[in-house]
Image (cartoon, rainbow, N blue to C red; front, top):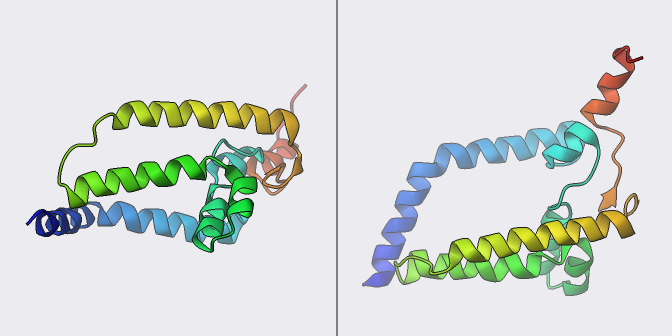
Amino acid sequence: MKIKEGFLQLKQDIKECYKGILAVIAYIFISNILFGTVCTLVIVTGIPCPACGLTRAGFSLLTLRFADAWNYNCIIFLIVPLLIYWFVCRYLFCCKCRGFKALLVILFICMIVLYVYRMTHYYPNHEPMIYHERNLLHLILPFLKIG
């Protein structure tokens, strides 16, 4: 019976969020065409964000290339179990995820610590921690008269 309730909950969630899902898909498509990335920080400043490499890490994980996933962004190995936990709680057991907010805070702290480490050790010469010249700030700065 719980699985049926979970399936109904999933349908309801999709129905309530479909406009947002479509907007995200459109953003991904358009930003990839225009800038070659979906990262807003990279698009605006050219500097990688704490989540840089997560998309590639996720695809690497799906294709069982664990070392590649680790090298792109090892936080993926914390995110996937957290997402599985949330999915199982919400859609299979139809209950609240105990401790989920605390786990998100821990995940956020881990991302920031890893970001600082990656920026001090790998930026700007190691993919994905590289500077992207195709950014809005780089395009706008020549037109600004500073100084």
